[in-house]
Image: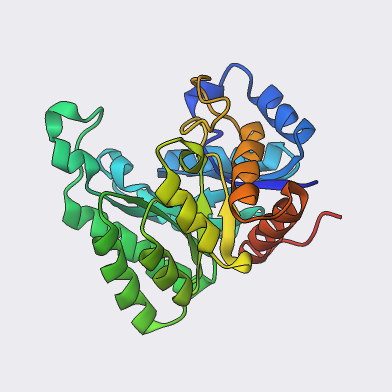
Length: 271
């Protein structure tokens, strides 16, 4: 059985003490491939460095909405310069986030990013994807309709290739995203006891459009949720949950989800 963790932040400080062991544990758990996802120019460079270091690790380069306040002049050009590097297979993560804006500055662990700035960079990533052919990775939090408005506009310009990362939207939203050419990815949140409605959404995603991820070090799935730091090896628990709700075996689901990821990221089979 081979699994593909399509979203992990391997460059983050939480993995500094044992990063090689984390990758090794993933392989022992059947996770043959991991996408290391950048959130800034610096993080994108670091993710690319890890892709070069570890077999089976690939890189996504981009600027996540909540990281934009820290962006330096020229950082977008730095991201663009990485596109033709070996093992870069996606753009992102990008997207929109109203969650922290709604809570206010006092609740945010970082400087808040104006929504129009988030929209500008989301649009940049989508347009770049349409130009270069790399799929884009969409961060979505408390802004489903805002995301859909921009995706509809972009779809009107031309085909879309991308993935809705750590999906938490409705079944109607998932269906519209699939109709526009996108994939739907589920992280540990789908395993939580309170997430019955999200599991119903996951059960309805077409076989050829579903992906799995950890979003590590965040969103540790059941039954290991008590572990504070998530890691790619835990994607097997999310896969098991999704296989159950979709009425199939873990092996069959893992094969399908891995095939989907390799298709989206234009990778050759490893076996």
